Image: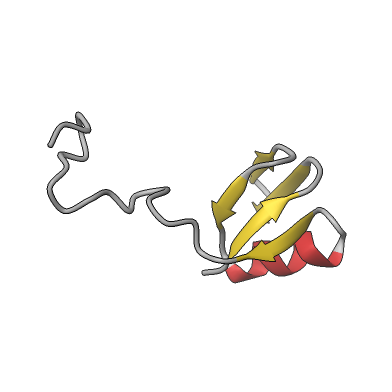
Length: 68
């Protein structure tokens, strides 16, 4: 799954019944389909993985509280 940075508001519709809104400036790991559509429409650019973000907690850190 690629990392992207959204350059403007983008609404991703994964299915007809769901949608996710990404604000400009958001840096996220998204599905390949979402990234391709956002990049194609000029709403995002591909970036390198954002270390320490979105579920990549340190091994010594409790993911619930953030305490070491």
